[in-house]
Amino acid sequence: HPRRMQGLIQREVSLFVGEDYFENSKDFALWLSTSPRKRPLALLGALRLNHHLNKETMKQSIDLTQRAPRAARVTLGAYALLPRMLDKCRAELEGKNGEYHYDCPLDKRLLEFIGLDAGALKAEVAKGKGDSEILEWIGAEMPIKRTPWEIAAWTNYQNSRGPTDFESREFFNGLLGALSKTRTDIVTWADLLDLDDYVTFGGKA
Image (cartoon, rainbow, N blue to C red; front, side):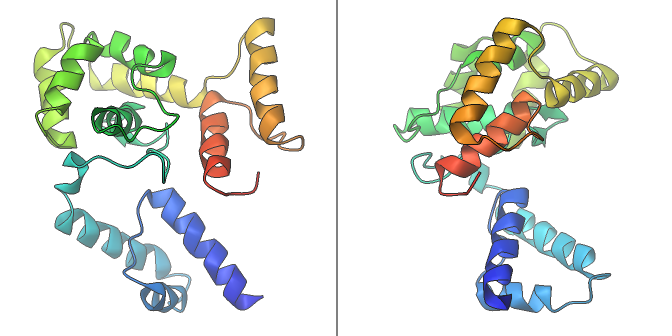
């Protein structure tokens, strides 16, 4: 059904970019009616405009009882996991973290890589700093300055990392099995987080 299909596409676009970049369904319908060849440019324009108008909003917390944090693969300063960790940190400071937890084992991987303490980072976030300000603080406070290629390699590894032994595979399969019995395409931890976030807020596995 065309209307149902439009709704599904709109939801997928919103999930991909992490925010609703269209003011209403009419704006989205207008984008959808654009020539397929021009849609990427139209969407890019919407992304740029929204970023310009809302560049300060990343200082605000996200209510994680209502929506998921940014995906694990979303990057800030080329660091995977960082936007997600900041979303959880801000939500936790305001008691809106729901079932999400700051300084979880995944966060610890990033904190170990940048060489910073979870408490110190949380204290900076509590000052109301935005994403770019936190990134600048991380760059200044890191005991070991990482090169761009080190950051890129680390991010690529995190994005493609899956269970590596029998115990972790068993744990992974147990979590996946609770969400879906058919999603054989879910092979990395980032895949599993995406699926879990999606299902948690009403999506079908």
